[in-house]
Image 1 (cartoon, rainbow, N blue to C red):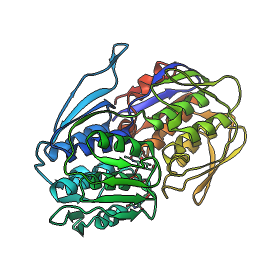
Image 2: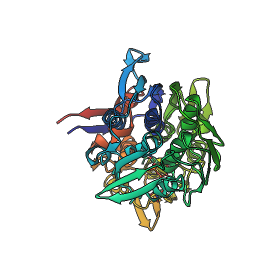
Image 3: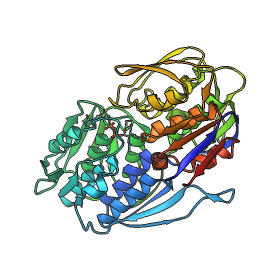
Length: 430
Ligand code: EPZ
């Protein structure tokens, strides 16, 4: 099994190209099931989660072809992928496939809207909390679906004439349930109004793509999204938006290691709150024509308190990385996680590098230390694992991160991107 070896101490200088967002690509790919025409997605990142979803969509009958690689300095990064589901050959998403990635549960929306039925295994995914699916079930039921849970599967059936537009207010903000209800409502009879909807940029990107396919969605990016049902959707061509979590992760890596890096093909507006926290920690951040420049020269890292929240708040998917940064701050910071109840598994691994962190409920108290020392550590989930890489960049000596398959789910060519900026990071195959 591969491991990542980091020798800390080098500053980062250069350019890091930011990939298309994993968390936008996944729902966009799933939206292709809504039409018998071809949906072409540009800027699709090459990640384990994307490959897994390609297998899942294939199981429903999608024909998928990859081409049009964008060459950059002799290497290909983004891909253009064509998805055509002329017919849906199966409305069942089996346990063997869905258990590997939670987002694959989201096929329930398009399958139900287009075929009138879906049988989808209850999901798996990162072990960061219980992550129930009650909001999906309640929301789809509001659109008239009959839903039963049996033997680990959700069996959903639409009324004879199809799903029916309705008003549904989410009792809690959920990115995935907003994606699914929005997709399902595009083909419903009448108008659907979703209250307390997620406002994440990935929701906006999905709505933009669905509208290009002929849907009538308005209000995306606010907490009230309105969807007027249409009879059918067509194909479209859509470019996946930049990955704001990857952007924030590398910004924190530069803030940690020091240096001067341009994060290319990304935008500050996708992560204002996180960038503000990094600025307060002592880095200089500015917008350039090609992306975002981040600089930390000489100045130490200051302690900053953060609380995770749905967009536009501080993203839970950057909480572990920010904690990694705070381990080297010059004081005490508090990091509060409000989205997931079990997203502190990186704490004990960071402690192996010498970090001083104590947990009290949903808040971690991080007492900055003047030095971290490399050690063997274990990746526990996708974002936790990259926080160990960030800490490793500033640790003395060698940090060896095992279980890197977590990293491969969400970070495209991580070691290559960091190495090109001067970091000592390599993949070691046993
Ligand atoms: C998405 O997950 C992201 N995944 C997550 O990123 C991200 O952490 C999360 O949104 C929050 O921003 C993708 O986009 C593929 P939620 P999702 O539904 O949609 C609770 C990563 O590292 N909830 O917004 O699954 C839930 O338990 C991943 O890339 C219910 O209670 O998250 C959580 O506490 C990890 N009932 C909260 O809502 C439900 O039916 C928010 O979850 C659904 C969710």
